[in-house]
Image (cartoon, rainbow, N blue to C red; front, side, top):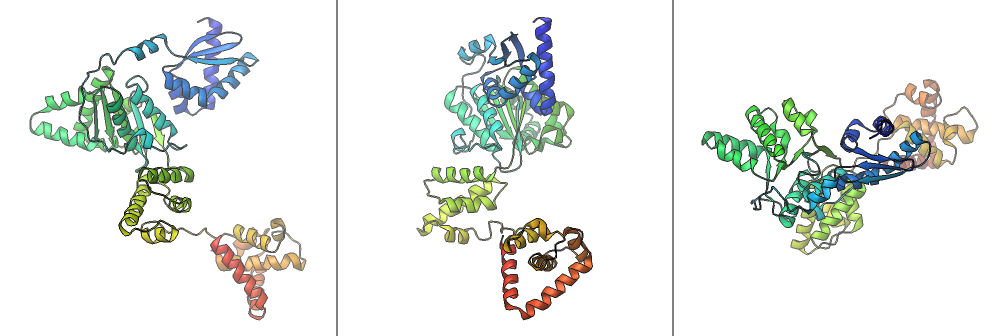
Length: 441
């Protein structure tokens, strides 16, 4: 690498680092190397095929823009793999024992049954890359997210993929199981057999690793197990409900090792993804789920995929047992007491102003203004009355939101509408209609 090439590469990395979150820069650009740079083309060497596809899809535009700023003109950008990568792929699992391990996996937890959305795209892609090329993509792979978002599904999908596509061994367990087996091994004086079991596997999948917190002897044992596997180029995949740095009382040396590879988070799914999950699960169960029913459930359960699936299981069981067609009425009855009640939108002064303005066909800005013509002042007084009736705001607070009017103005408006509604049936009906609109909007 010439001094000029080195200078261009370092300047590019510096610009990218300023634009990206530290974790993203560390994950996707630290492992890359400059292969070559000419006046027309920048070639970057990346660790593996998964890296190449991810950078091409999500960062190509940014790389092109920044290299164009440095060079003064647009340049072609290409990614290449290390020469040894293709040789590794051709070798038939050299260094891995060709034997199977027996693990209890959920038969439903495969990659093809995992619904991918914006909330989990990175975690899914990384898990698949690890399954396809253990210890060559990301090691360790650390997946974190709240309960019920699919971490266990991805770990077990890796196990299923290995079972179906290779002769590697793998071990899947929770950190609680690891702790309990260690306790039993110490009690029965079988720690050597315990270590042999976990340090001789090709792929170690540990769920809920955060439960190691506070267990000093277990952390000590897992630290040495981790080192033994990593040094032997065996794959480690961990899941947690939080990133390593946030796991309380986790030893610093373990935290550091958990951060060696890729950390991928899973967020709560958006509405479209939740609907897709329900439709996918219904398809697997050979159940016809109407779109309005899927939307109804997805709108009420927003953060836990297990709860979504639990609702579907309940509906399926009820429909099968009682031979009932699935529709909105039956679903509301079946899931009564399970789905959270839909919370009404809080009524605010701003919402009242917007609703009254629309109802009387005047501009929202005028209702907050100083015009005193009856066509403006009367709707304004109605809005002030509704604000006092339907919000928690005081007279002074309401006045402040109507262009800084004095609280006595709001009090006058409120009393005027109260008195007039007693005599004017049309006004009384309009107030009822407006209240209904506000409470159901």
